[in-house]
Each structure stands twice: as structure tokens, then as C-alpha cells.
Length: 472
Image (tube, rainbow, N blue to C red):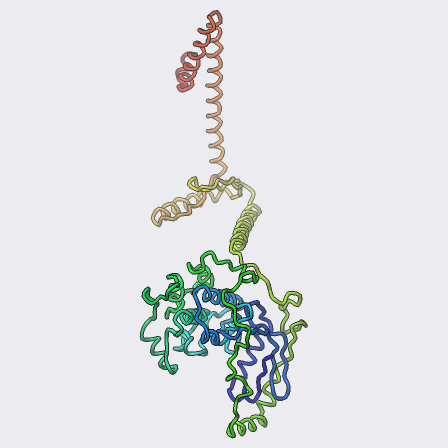
């Protein structure tokens, strides 16, 4: 249970962030997030009933342990799955850091704290709000520029850098110092700085994530760039999602918590007590949390229609082969729909679409319809298309169009060839019978020799049709 004092929330001016987190967690539900099940309040406090994970946060474990490449890779993979889910829901976390990553008893990492997360609309893909922790904020956020989902990938690279070297790439005692260090130079992990038992692909992954320019940053074209990186080659994302993959690092069976952050030890001075007394009598304390409604995960309401009660963890398969097959089916269906539309438009003249002869796969010709008036127009387009394709070395060539007139001519040519073959075969039969009649009185050996000579004559006659006509 997460208990939050209303007086402290008002004192820190974080009412909007608390409400923001509650609203996001009401419809987000994922195995690698810290999910919420209930939300309610009383006169003094706000309450959230969330998942209990006893492994401590990643900051506590970084202070206690040295992580290997295999352990760091598992942590980064868990974070990538959580970011993939919230990015699909058009949400930027913007505060990704070790304090907001909680480990369970099995060593899996779960993302939490959506206080300063940003929901992007369907039309917009960027934001200008400056918020986050200075050591993990991207340069565009530090400078107050427009930023997108790649800010989370920059923070992910900083976490990987910190697991490798146990310190951040851009350091400073204040926000200004960190900003100056970011603007001064681009930090990179050179080959000499890679620790032992760490691969070059891990350093390349971190270097591409902490790039200052968002265009050069890994994940700018989508989170699949992170999954398809060489560091995650042959990594089974489906087993990780379904819980079949075991973590190499398992936290100790202790509290895994630093008690100096506990509320019981906090000392409240006279000045803070007076300030809290003023807050209790203010309007924000009385009316500021009126829209912090009661929430129950097991009851479907207007605010959380998308939540599945039977399956609290929304399971989806991460298989790129299935996705590619679906895309191919959609492409084929769209193509067939266009063919049917063209068939219904006009029914006067038939023409055939055939693929280029250079293509490896041989498919059946598909029959379409088109008016005879458009024949000249299409031929002109073909000429202009061929000129353009030669100049630009276009790989895919436009399919050839054969109209009804052309089809008739092709049929006539094919019939002529068939008649010629029939004529030659008939003559060969006559010649063979004639040779047999002449050699009927000969011996068996001579008869065999005659057959050999007949085959020789057959080849000569069949190769030249003009001689056959003259002999006849």
C-alpha cells in the first residue's frame, strides 16, 4: 500500500502529478509494470494498492552489487518491454531512472512512478514540457525543446552506462553543470574503456542510446531498433514476457530497503508543522482532491472500460513472423479488392496482367477489364514509364498489359507453330513407314541398321521443313 499525505502533496505542489499517476494506472496493466488494483482516500491521506515486489529498487541494488553484462542485459530487456507497452498507449514516462525500477523476488524489473508521464494525442507526437531527473534527462528536454518517445531511450542508455561503469556519463552537482557537460562533448565508450567480460555490442548499444541528437539515437524509428540490435541477437522476447526466462541475478531474501527514507524516522520541525497547519485550513486541502475517485480493478466502470477482469495481465504474443504474415495477408487482400473493383467498373475488353520475366516466382495471369478507348493512353504511359525506369534503375518493373487485339495475334502465332509441328511429325511418320517397307526383305541385322539410318534421316528432315516440302 502506498500512503501519501495530502499536506505534503500540497506543500511540494505535486497535486497534478499524483492525479496523473492514478489516472494512468487505472487503465495500464502489464507484467513489467507496478500495477494498481485499488485507489481511495480519507481526510488526511491518499492511498494506492499496488503490486508488492520485495527485491528493492535498482538504485539500492547498484549500491550493493556489481552487475555483469548478462545481468544488465536482462534488466534492459525488461525495461524495453515495459516501454514498448506504454509507448503503444502514446505515453512517455520521462522519469526513467534506477529509483523507479523495482525488482521482484525472481529478479525481474518493473517500471513505476508515472507522476510526470505525458500522454500524447493522436495528432501530436512531441511535447515541450521540461521535467525529469537531471542526470537522466535528454539534451532536448534540458534545453526546453520539442521531444518525443526517444527521451526514454536516452535514459535507458544512461542506466546501461551506469551498470557498466557504476557512474553516469554526464555528471554534475547541479542541473546547470550537467547541462554544460552534455553540451560540451558527446560521451562514448571506447574500446579501451570496455570492462572485462563485456562485449563490444553492449558498448555499441549504450553509445547509440546516449547520442545527443535524437535523429542519431537508437530507437528514433521505433522500439524495434532496440530489439533488433546485435546485442539482443537470438534473444527470446516471448519467453521473457511469459515468465519462462530465469534471471541471472536474484535479490537476497531480506528487506532490500534503506530505512533512512522511511516516514517513521522523518523529523518534522516547528516551521514545517506551522506550514502544515496552514495547509489544513486552506481551500486546496478541502477541495483539491475531489476528483480523486475510488477505483477498483475488479469492477468495470466508465473510467476503465478497457481493463480485462478475467485476464488482469493483457497477454500479447511477441512474434515478428506472425506480424509479417498478417501484413502480407493485408497486402494481398487489398490487391484482390482493387482487382474486383476494376472488374465491376467496366466489362468490355479483357486484358491480362503478367509479372516481369525476371521475377523468380511464377504466378498465374490475372484477368482484368478495361475500355478499348484507354488502350492508347496506357501504351503511352508504358513508354514514359520505361524511359523513367532506365534512368532511375527502378527495381520493380510495371506489369505488361496485353489487350484483346494482342491476345488474338498471340493465339494466331501459337496456332501456326502448332500446325508446323503437326506437319513435320506427319512427314516423319511417312518416311519411317517407307523405310520399313523397303527393308522388309532384309536380314535382322540389316533391319536394325535401317532403323538407325531412319532415325538419322528423321533428324535431317525434321530440322528443315523446306526440304520436306520439296521431297514430297
